[in-house]
Length: 127
Image 1: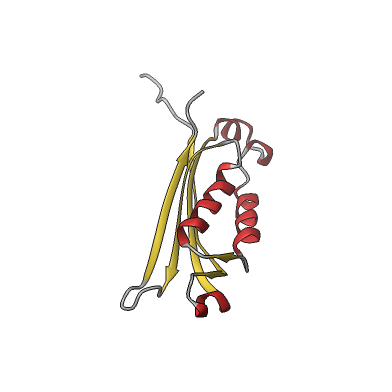
Image 2: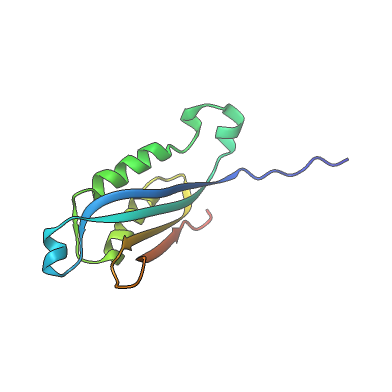
């Protein structure tokens, strides 16, 4: 029997990171913090983490989360698109990340809607 081929492309999801920030262009939005809900999905080669079973060999998603919190919490953004782009750049600043998608929801941004969200993604070209 042929052993299975196992790919160690790990998918990491940071789900429903709830932060407060200044987001928007209306006076009320400029003067009052609002909730945003951040979701990050990323892929990296986890071969070393699987083989070594040591934290030093893995992508530290806690560090990425702290960087996102530090950047977004209490900051000011006119557009959801810009905030999403900046969070995506924080994730992609980690060389191990091969692909990432960031989606940020702004709850109750529209009347009768639960939320409005913007999603952006980036990838590294294969070397």
